[in-house]
Image (cartoon, rainbow, N blue to C red; front, side, top):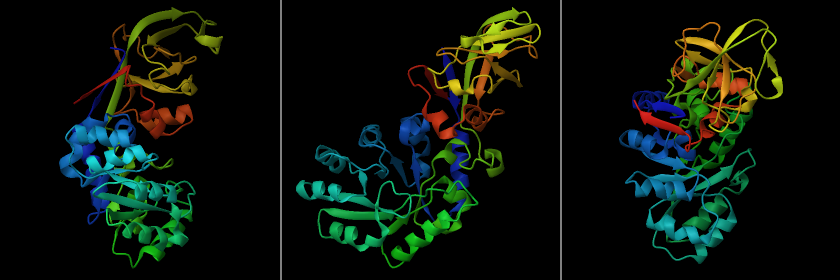
Length: 356
């Protein structure tokens, strides 16, 4: 087994409870896109299904996968659909696409189906997907003119909710509420950052994503301060040990050199598994509850670590890459990225996950 890990149902449900504590009157649409943020789409959905009101995914394929795995709760497709061929699948599986452009309406109006529920997305400033909020009435009226379409709700998405010093999120919230205040439809604004720090967004349906998996959406606030627990513990093992003399180099490019006699270990994890090359000589791993340095360049299938402080480690000793005691945020910082990218870069072909 190359890289392996465990997923904690208890931690996942705990993090869901934190979302509910912040928005006790809202309905919960758990975001499980990109293979449940790398934790396993079906595994995560089955753990959460009885505790949430619905799910959100990115693609039609993910939504169909959930339905064919007997997930019966409402499923919202955040990226909607892009081809008329997908409409039959949406209707057949009772999936709720997000509609964000007139071309999607044109495809719906040319298709034949009995009934389809949709979310209409409005752009309040992110300028990615959504109808202009100034044209609020037009897409709603267009949907209501089609007897086969039912509007499930209205949504928007925040651009800067992870920046607590930015006024942009308040502007987006106010803009959305100004137009939707008299609407009879459900609304959905809050992502994880909105749930945790923007109270005015905690209405209708909330969409917890990264927080469910125990990572903070805020660069300056660690997850434990938000009472979030890591859901995944990811490991590999030492596959070789060496004792190097002062001046010896380690890894590709000879970018790291021993200043003294150094014991090193080679760990069976690399960028091919999702351990970023950009974390070379900056990340730490955990061995026997002690943090040790990654040294030299991370290779495709392996990385090197400094064992001077844990010389009792041997071939076969487990090495924690992130999880309890070593937050995923630490690896993300070392790699110059965000926890979202760490989770979703895990390679399911080489990383084996099981439930605790």
